[in-house]
Image 1 (cartoon, rainbow, N blue to C red):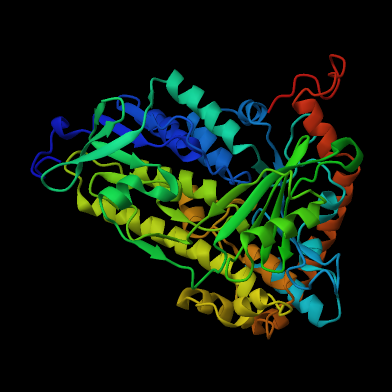
Image 2: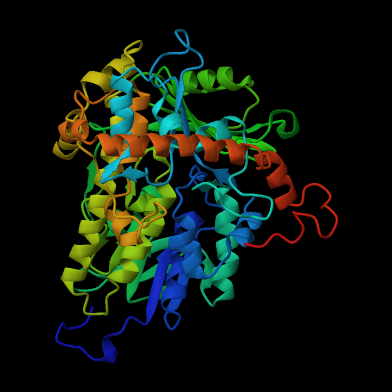
Length: 542
């Protein structure tokens, strides 16, 4: 680093070195090269190093915040990465064990809950429920659930969007695709192994030394080395804040599962299936689905998790190949230390219950570009970046924890521990108290279509009132009282009744016109003969 009194162009960052490939490394390389095309960017990747690759589901702002910034259309990267649609998460048996009710489920849907006269529809739903209406929250307040039950596509045949959605994809294909993009833009890709980190006199990183004798010097270093934290942790000694007292799961076993799409269709949602000592994800792609069992080693062994996983999907544990992962839930005390910024798993990890892994990567890149330094490394920039990452992570941790601590299940030691033994943050207690009192929770700033006005608003407030209601109402937890002022708003109640009716009408109209998700994806990925020119599907355009 150079003296802080230097304020001319000579202090500009000239070179960035990224340690680690995978999704985080190549997202960082492509994003930073697009943001700062004049900077020399080098990515050092160890050849043959296994990649985690469990982040195969995303949240909806991936396109607007990341790919739109890169200038890459949705259709292009989707085709390159065998991507499919994700319109929400279907939680199965989080409220009741399968022995009691094998069909118990609820949806967590995307998009902002519609509001009526300053209050979200959730509050009018609560009032209707008090008066005897037993329709589930998601089916009353969103048009999507019947469409997802029917496995319909969120896009029309001419590629018009009808639902707010995210994506499923093969994370390895995403990394390979972004590698081609980034190197095409001039990022230098070096396949070699790190052997030593050279430090400056003031403790900053000066260069990375490799097995083949390279010395890679840089002004700014990006640590994408995953759980190993080779730069921010091993070299710079930044403490990792373990949060296993908030969330009990610490391992996963994962494997792709074959699927007969033609016979069974392709679900346009992720599934989260509660198990005795954790939960199993299901991420549908064409020809297979990605799946894994996230478990707590305090309540089941790795072999026990494998047996449970194989029972669920009818697999042979002796012949199925598994990716076996052990992890710590938590984050670095600081993600940016001196001239090193950690991105992805080297920065923080939260089990993938709400598909936050890839979101944490591009949200951090957005914040890094916003607070991008020069070689004086003004500590205020790093402090503001670290504050933003801390808020993002801790808020997401609380939201994920809410799924566990508010579940009424007590049929196994794991579920009893989640209900009674977890450490609950003051911020989550505050939100749950607001919810129980009938107050709106995390009301966002949105435009007339119900989407966030900008990423800054979303970054500070991603888990919305609708998110809380989807989860808590789905778990059978309801407000203790109706917001008193709503009882006086007879006109608003009538307006809301019309909005509920419109949701039903819009859902029925879409159900009559949308293609199945399987049919759309097969045509989109050209896995069956294209329709004749001039047909609805010919030449899909955004």
